[in-house]
Image (cartoon, rainbow, N blue to C red):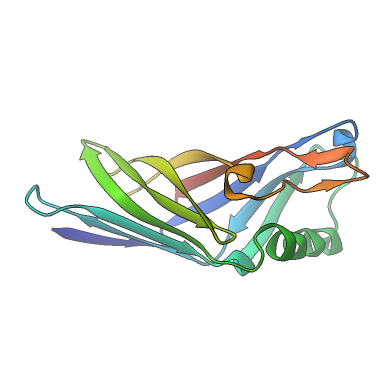
Length: 172
């Protein structure tokens, strides 16, 4: 069995949100960096089962970019967005994944398990590439409503964050 620890020094973990609604042009599509996260991969040798665990601190988010808005995001805007995500969307809860099944086929690692967000758990499958070199990369779509999260909306519902967000892992 081999064990591999991953974190911010090894890869960038980003959340990409997209806007919709009648007033979408006044909002921004966001690229959010997760600053404090850890993953542990235990890869079995055939006789031993494999496992994957992941945790992220919801308070470690940073807005890297606000794309396609009418005006650039200010530092104050960025701070307010992070505060809203932590308190109203994620409700100060950590994010965690624990696998129920992990398999590796050449360069591809596939993990199925329970993802916990805002205190709710839901099964998800994550596929990562680069397993042979240990430089993992991949993305997964997460539908917020599956975890009981009501996507953010403003301007009396005319500006909304799309229910589906994209989580992207890229090697450094």
